[in-house]
Length: 385
Image (tube, rainbow, N blue to C red):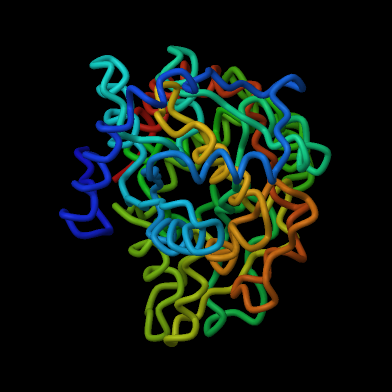
């Protein structure tokens, strides 16, 4: 699937910024030091700000349009110019890879919502570096430090509050029963890597919980020829003819439309709950066993060849503060800085149930990357149209 980059500033502004970078590149070359998450890389915040102000403007890529406001607010707060550009994760990875290979780096910071691809295609090749702000490090779980995960995007099971007073699903295995045949809406796992990564993470870290959930639902142990309880669940879910959509919007519409005639349940991002303000009827399936959904990580990385390494690091630092991440918080996206809570007006109410979400372990992201095709094959072989 080809992604399209969507610039968020006028061409002349971005062009001038690029020209300025080229003019200053020779002067700044001596300061282009490789940055990694280590104690030796600790930088005093005020010194970092002072150094950043001497550097060229930075370009920041992310898959959310909120990066526009974040870059603008950053520029106003620190007097360091930043330009936000919205693009899909595959396109961001391609841009950074090509620039690194051509030794012509223009991107400075990227928020990569596809963690396995970001690690395998960028970090492991040295095209980008991970940097953890030393003054915030103690508030970030170690699982999210190598590499730095900036934000977690919850994908949750949802239902229609018009049709039901509470979620009709209490166990993920119920989704495989005849009652819900053709009535589970979700994005197609063959085109949405987050879903195959979810399968992989469940098999690696939550498989016993999936097995226990089967016992709880059916009163007998799971008997399966599959390699894991998760694989058995994925096979059964695919065979139950779920409604596969091309986007989160389509899945949310199928589940939460106020005039919807089908009693759908399914998976959507917490960002879709904001549509309840326009009449949607999405409700959160809290209490489901073994999980109510999962948190998908977005990495925060600095381009290795950035001509403005201090400004790039300052932007990463900004994203790890309550003020910096606030525009994404209203969508239910959670900072990995544990001192930051979601705003009170977040629509899904996921803050109260964050402990019921599956935790994504970036340490095993390589397994997720390597097994994507296997999970897609399992899905395709069993999906009943």
